Image (cartoon, rainbow, N blue to C red; front, side):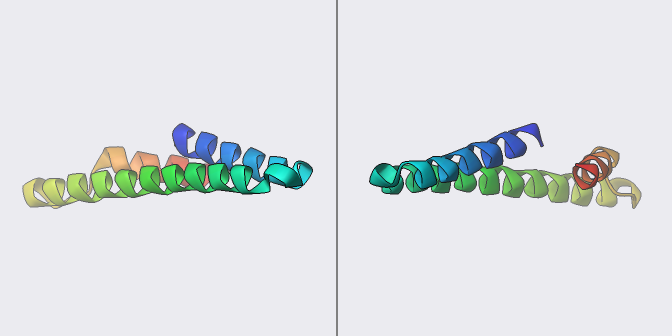
Length: 78
């Protein structure tokens, strides 16, 4: 979760730089896009991991993964 927040913050900073430095706007917007892509990839990885773990746990005991449940609660609180 910390990585996602960090990537989003860096993307926001790049967008702010684009506003303050219009001569290099294309560069800063490209960097913002890169950070947002990394954040999206991290989110997708997290959910893929949780879905895989939940499926594996359901096959064993018919209960969802406690680790992913705890992560979802932490993510919702942030």
